[in-house]
Image (cartoon, rainbow, N blue to C red):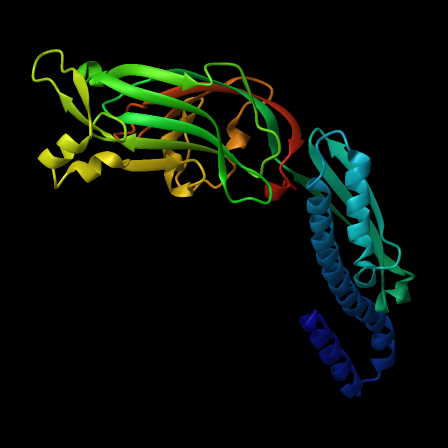
Length: 335
C-alpha cells in the first residue's frame, strides 16, 4: 500500500514539473487510472485487515458453540455463538451476517460483511465483500464403557486402575482394577489376571478426567510381598509376606518391598508412547484425553507396555464406549 501511494505521489510530482505542451493531455490520460490504482490498494488493504479481524471473531465463536455441541443440539450451540459475536459488534462492519450449521459433530460458523471503500468510489465501487468460515469440534465424552481385559504377561507384577476425577474434587475415584501376578518367568513371563469388577459395563457418570494407571513392582510380587524365583527349569515365582520376621532378617531392603517400583499414567504426556491403539503406538508428548481413543462406533483394541521394552506389550484390553456428550475442555478448530 505504501509503495503504491509513493508511486502515485512521485508520478504526480513529475507531471506537475513537466513544462511540455502535452502536459494537460497526458495528465488527463493517466491521472485517473493512477488515482484509482492507488485508491484500490488502500481500500483492499483495509478490507484485508477487516477480514482478518472477522476471521478471529468467527474462530472464537465456533469454539464457543463447539463447547456445548454434541451433534444434536445445534440451536443451543448457535445461541451461544451468536451471543459471542454480538459482544464484538463494535469491532465489525455494521452489516455483518452470520450463519451456523453442523456436519456430524462439527459446529460451523460462516460470516459475511461489506467493507466501505473510500477512494474506489471514483469508479462507483462503494464496498468490498468479505467472508470467513470457521469450524470446531469437541471430542466425544463417553458416559459408559465396556472395558474387557484380554491378556496380561511379563516378568513384573502390575496393578491397573480405571479412575475418574469428579467435578469440584481433586480426588481420584477408582472404578475398577486389574491385577497381574506372574507365576513363572518362562515364556517371557506368564501368570494370572484378576479383574474387579469381573465384567460388564462401567458407568463413568459425571467426570472431568478419565485415567488409566499402571503400578508396577519389578520383584514379581505386589506391595507387602517379596518375590523370588526358583532356580530350576520351571522358574516359578514365590511371594513371601513382609512380616516382622522378614523385616528383622532384611533390615536394609524390606522397605523396597512395600512400594511400587514405577507408575505409568495416561494423563502423563511423557508416558503416552507406552500405549498402543489398534496396533499404532501413540507419540510421546500426546496430551489428548484418554477417552478420545475409546471407540464410540466400533470396539478398539489397546495394548500397554509396562516399561520393559517396546517390542512386546504387557497388558491388553478391548474397549467400546457409549458416547452421548462432548468434552468442552478440549474443543478445537478444524477449519
